[in-house]
Image 1 (tube, rainbow, N blue to C red):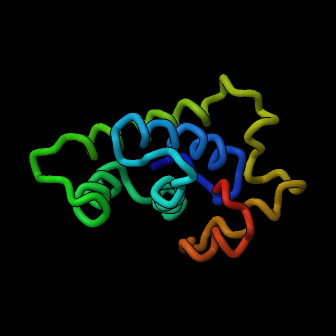
Image 2 (cartoon, rainbow, N blue to C red):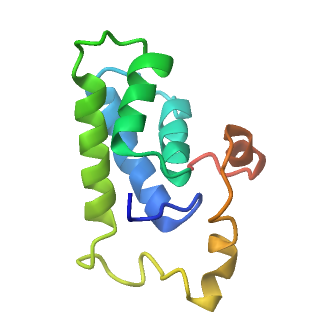
Image 3 (cartoon, rainbow, N blue to C red):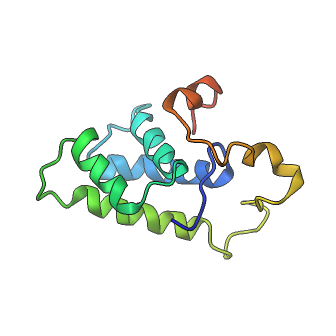
Length: 128
C-alpha cells in the first residue's frame, strides 16, 4: 500500500467512521458500540498489511468464513478504495496534514512502529 495510515491521524479516524457502518452492512457487527473489529482493521492498515493479507486474515483468523465466501475479499477491496478516496488530493489539505509538517510531528512519530491492540486502548481514544 503506497498510502501510509497513521494511528490516531485524521485519515485513521475517517476510515474508522467509514468502516463501522460497513461492518454492520455486511453483517460482521451489530453496530452497538462494537468497535473492536474496526479497530483491528485500522491496525492492520497502520502495520502496512496488503489488501490480500487483510482479506485472508479477516476470512480465516477473525471471521472463520469459508474459502468460497467472497465477503472478506470484497470488504478488503472496498477498504482500500476508501483509503485512496479519503487520502486523495480532492480532500482539503488541512484535513490530512503532510507527514513532513513539523506541527504534526507527534502524530507521525510512531509511523515506523507496529501498533498493537493494547496501544489504542491505552491512549484513551476509543475512536481509533
